[in-house]
Length: 498
Image: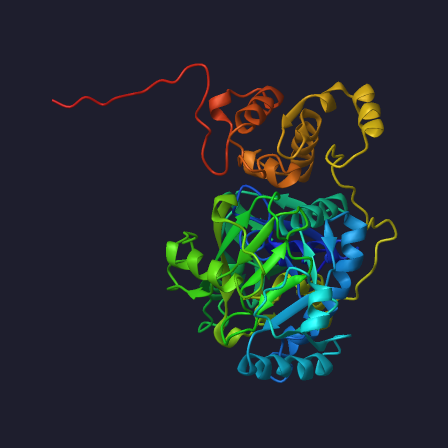
């Protein structure tokens, strides 16, 4: 066996991407990050509540790994966000109770906070509660205050982590679906994909909702199943009168952490989610429902003194979270077959825990496979964000335009996004290894299309920039997985019968 191990990581969500970044710190590995979608982070990592959880809601006796890695992940994101220029803030979290029964339940989390070493968690009542959160609902009796709770931009986090991993030698392969793990003579040999066979000495399964399929193909944990749990959300425009300053959520239930009301790092109010367990075959069902959206709106009224009008909703969406048996993460390195590693069924608080999960997996690999990890001397922890016009002083904008006139051409007026930012994002996607430049991928990198009109004004302009940049017809530009289909000429082929 060579001193350098070929590693394939299945799934470029936050867990797989974080593992790639951590392993890229070491000389020992030649790493390929494989993703079936056209872009990174398009699964559970994208459509979630954007919370960096404090860790006081995890029961260490039931889920010791979740409890440990959530608290550590909360700490690590503070460093990672600075190094990678990811939008993040730590306003603290308030678990709101409205009656004696809810207060009794909420008090249990004070004990869990002590067991998990989560600092500063305490009960507060109406007077202090209204100082910490002026927009709290009048019915609120009190709350559990966890000062280390945070908010992050989840899609940008994954993009940033992947860009940094690629900068440090990781190869990204998008639109590459892993069909199975090949095992021979008790060792991993690689993965079969829709784009051919990829040889590997170590395969790390971070496939989220589909991690059970990858696990079974390696011949292990044959009873392990991941079920989809749907969460529906309402996203409001930035321009509404009442916005929470803290992370607010209702007292948790046995299946959900509760409904949240937050102001995202981009300034929008987000409320949700529901928690609906779907059949195992419904892993692609990201539909929303009147019933689900009505539920989150009603629950959020327990949190806010004034609900934003529904007329200010700019988007509804649903995320699917992987729910493993008993809520237990499956993180394990196997000696039979040698080289297979599971980071499977990573449900909440998986996003918060991702950096810590990555370190945990690196240590598992070292210990189980007897690999002495050798750190690179030239590993670069830093990644810069896209140069943005929004919220930049006019004097700085003038300087940018002098150097590059494309900064003077505004494409998205809702979010003040220039042509130069779109072009920079395209260049970054190509450099990262994105096979197909999508309008959705550009939206997540530049915010163009995130405003009130949701791209109604700017999408075709962005498509035209992509068309000219890549030298492809306008109708051939991809939105998400399908072509845009607009241009100078459309041809309709009709099959005539009879």
